[in-house]
Image 1 (cartoon, rainbow, N blue to C red):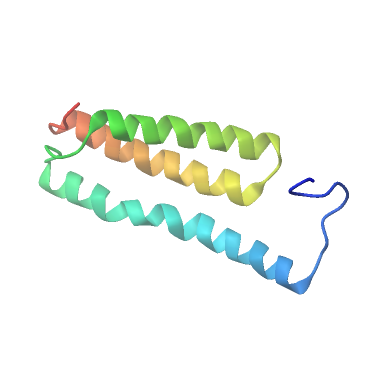
Image 2 (cartoon, rainbow, N blue to C red):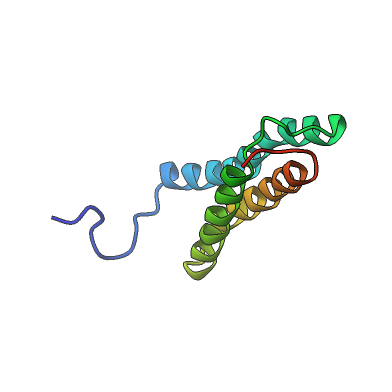
Length: 101
């Protein structure tokens, strides 16, 4: 038994709605990182930020950018490109202002 049967996906109003919601989530989801970025860059303090964790987040998101691009999945590519950029900003801030390993 296959999880996803072979053939073309069914195009329904529900599927189109989910597709539109995916674009919204791709834009809004990464924005949840903005408060962390603002805090780090305003205070010049990242003492409680894990450099290794944010480096890992950035690397894994970059992989998903590649995966989304290869599979021509724009919401996946867009979301993870934004995640990679914003996570990279946290990572740089952590390196500059005393993040922990």
